[in-house]
Length: 171
Image (cartoon, rainbow, N blue to C red; front, side, top):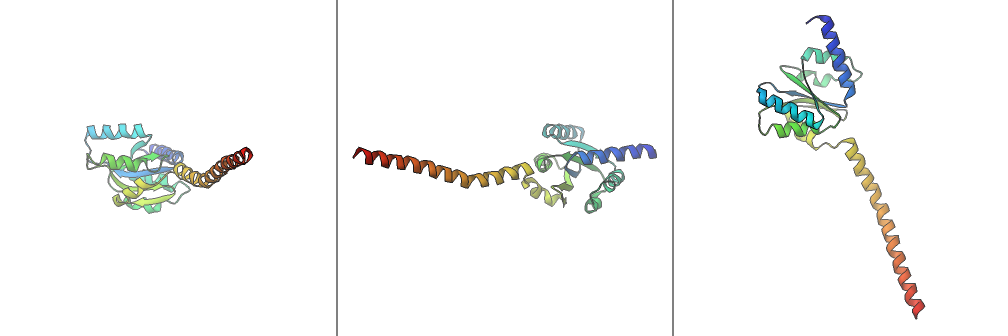
């Protein structure tokens, strides 16, 4: 591969890294063609972009960004498949589900919600991570709960007061 081709690939990887807020590094080596096709279909269905890249080119693209990705440079060995997504836990759920029927993909590392997760043992943690939208929904629900209780109490108090006044006026 010529130097110009490598530069183009690095620029494309850097652009893709900027387009997605989360990415996973996985090992898919050893999957047969049927399993690979199934994985690609599952990724497309979940809105996950799947790319197989050379480790050196990926490292150069990561170094070219504004974020310090050095904690994951240690896993850039052997075969590396990238999973790009805007939903932090979607690839983790996909990997966990897919691993029930096949030995791979194996999680090498992930960059999710501006944090690094290295190793297959982090998969369960990544599955349980909530997205920003889910967290915002939880906070809004918590904030609305007391207000709903107050409104409900005021409404029920008004009907009780009306009932008492009606009873007194009839006497």
